[in-house]
Length: 242
Ligand SMILES: [Fe+2]
Image 1 (cartoon, rainbow, N blue to C red):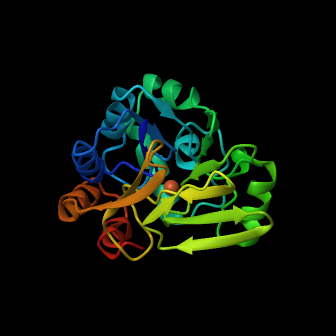
Image 2 (cartoon, rainbow, N blue to C red; image 1 turned 90 degrees about the vertical axis):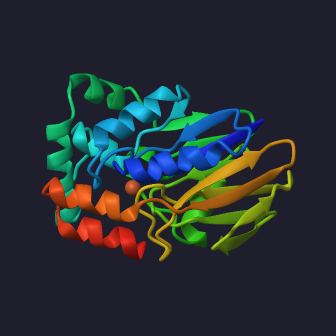
């Protein structure tokens, strides 16, 4: 089975379409989405419709819940908060109902998908380092947990009691004696200094997880953000990958 795992699209249709086009080169059986479909970018409704169209597993992210007022946004920076208000104005009742139907966690035999972490997914805590990872590993009964949220592609590998981070990881060979937390990076707003869209493909036969980076039309996405009256910082950061 071959899975494509996407996260943090953030209303960036140019990046999302480029990722789907890139994924066409691979015999993908199923698409999984880890949330934050909306927020920041200028095409929240279009991204929601595109994600809905692949009819597979979609988890909720904090920006999705921000626009349906299921989560507190007091910790959001002013740019994010402004984007939340603008995004609400673009969505209808059906969109809100769809977002509110999304689960926090999805699980299969060998893996979980969640936006932020398994311990308290509704609190949206980040997994940045070995300590954060250890809490998540503690409750993992399955081999792999796919996450997003920080917009930084990376992985943590746990073998016996040793946790090894893989910053800037490009490929993992899955060892069934290990556990993995895999951050697939962000489709629509990468923050690792590389502006290309990020997503992962897992091949369960070959036992591989590969990160892919995809060039997309950043200038077009930026122009839409400016034309929508969203903060220019949200356009600027796309080119920086920050
Ligand atoms: Fe996000």
